[in-house]
Structures are given as structure tokens and as C-alpha cells.
Length: 258
Image (tube, rainbow, N blue to C red; front, side, top):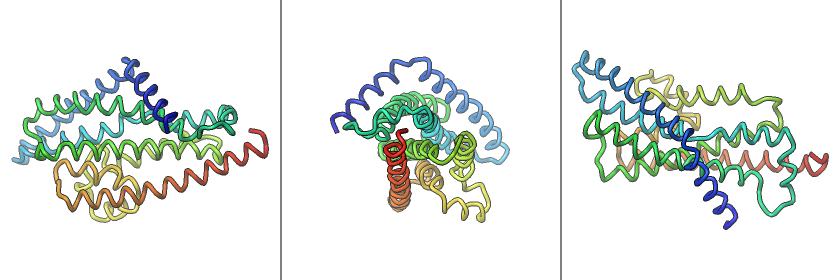
């Protein structure tokens, strides 16, 4: 565990040092908040619902914190599998997959914390009081951080699909689109018809994203318990897939030599 903690620390420091990447993501987040703030101010004024803008912008902030903070661990893993880099780590006293996951978590944490602090301040200045109580903010922040961790694991699982696929570009693009649609990455799923929500409930995107971010405007201990339960279930399924895929991958390397 000390090795993985050291990897996490190094990755976190490297991410903080990469100012251009951090500021680029932060700038993109500010642009999204600014544009959609004006858009929903107009929509709220037309519908005599001034609370609509405040609720939606805080929802958008936490959704984009989860999405934008995650590095492209899938591409890194896929390239390591294809170019044989992974073969160098087989037999060493460290798991290659966990090493890449921990590195991605360190990079994600730096972006998530920066966007969480500065993004919350910017949103607070634009909309005023948030739709949640401040005593619930640490819980919401922690839940969104855990969802971002789950997102990292999901992208790593996609990278492991390089074991069977010649390219993961299409799969990665599909996952990204499903995050925005079935996960409510831009708009809350409550605006969609019931049949669409029923479909989304059978995917990990519904709990990893929507149920977690929904706590921003509909916080309750019951909703929190449902989100934790479903997230834990999907986490176990993804973990089982990664264990299976990584086991097959290391077996193939041991037999065929990479």
C-alpha cells in the first residue's frame, strides 16, 4: 500500500505542476457555467421560475467537476497494452493496472479539488445561495468525488478492452455520449420522459452521475442511501470485470510473452 500511496502522491504533485492542463479545464468549466447561466436566466424569466437557473447551474457545476476532472486513463492503458509496456511490469511486486488507476486518481484529485473550490465560488457569485443547505455541502462534495473515482475505474476498464478490441476509440466515444444522455451530464434526467429514465436506471451512468448529482437540488438521507447502494453494486460489477480482464491479459503475456 505504501507503493500505491507514493504513486498517488507523485501523480497529484505532477498534476498540480501541470498548470496549463489545470487552467485549461478550469477555463472550460467557467465558460460552460457562464453560458448556461445566461441561457437558464432567460428560460427562467420566460417561465416565471427564477429558482430554475440557480438549481440548474449548481447541478451543472458538480456534473462537469466529475466529467472534466477525469484523465484519459483508457487511452493510456490501451497504448500500454498495445505497445508492450505492460509486459515489463508482469512479475514485478506491483500491479500494473492498480498503478495506472492510482496515477489517474492522483491527477483527477488535483483537477477535482481546484474546480470544486473555484467553481463553487464562481457559481455562488453568479446565482447566490445554492439549492442545498451548506451543512450538506461536504456530503455532496464527497459523493461527487467518489463518483469521479468510479468514473476513473470505468475508463480504466474501457482501456482493458484493448485485450479484445483493435481500437477503443469508438467505445470511448460511446461511453462519453452515454454519460451526457443516460447519466444526465448536461441536463437532469427529470426533464426526459419516463420511458427514457426507466432505460437509464439499468446503466451505471444513472447512479454514478445522475443520482449523485441530484443530491444538489434534492438532498435527503433516503436519496443518499439509494445512491450509495447502487454505486456500490455497479462498482462491484466493474471491479469483477477488471479482475477478469486483467487476469486474462497477464495470462496471455505469460504464455505468449507479450
